[in-house]
Length: 293
Image: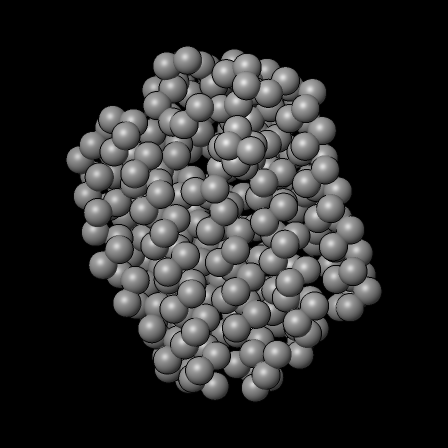
């Protein structure tokens, strides 16, 4: 169980959980109540499973391409370390995606066929991140994927399955969540940029260099709080959604580590702290949306 938990990469899971909570809370605020509890739980579980499936697919594909070498600074990858056979990792990947797809069928029954299309594109994006003949994660586009799918798609999709409409409030919140989720990947890729470069994995950090990657990280972390404030002000509330700003002090340690450190342990800690900041930011924002209605 510890091996499979490591393979699921729990430090990245806030990126899957946070947008569902915020999107659903925005729907609660707009409708003055929770229209569909079943849709909330289905969207939450499906989002987590798509994240886990993407992590497993990444583990499998990176091992096959030789990107996870013994000198990488991040946590052990189960395929490259020989802890789990590639075939079992691949089977687990499709089990995760398969269950997520079944939940997508339920959501489509509740909120319309468009949800099936969104789910299919999300799963395909997860597979092709490091898999397929031209993985976009090897071309510096991973951050774009995270911003789109763990920000815009997840938040607005979670809102849509509740009310079957879109609005500016969840859109603005999706940008803020997308910034923090993307920051998680920026930490990961900045930590691994030396080994990625040797493996010819051209991530965004490899393309732009360490200093610009650090600047991007700071922009994403602080920008999320600016976007939250602007979204609440321009949409006229709920003003208690500004509770999310209380997570700002949690950015101090990871920002300092990203700006000054290059060693694996420090950046691994920054990765966990970034995920924690995303989780607390999202939880406080969601609570503010609900109780401020």
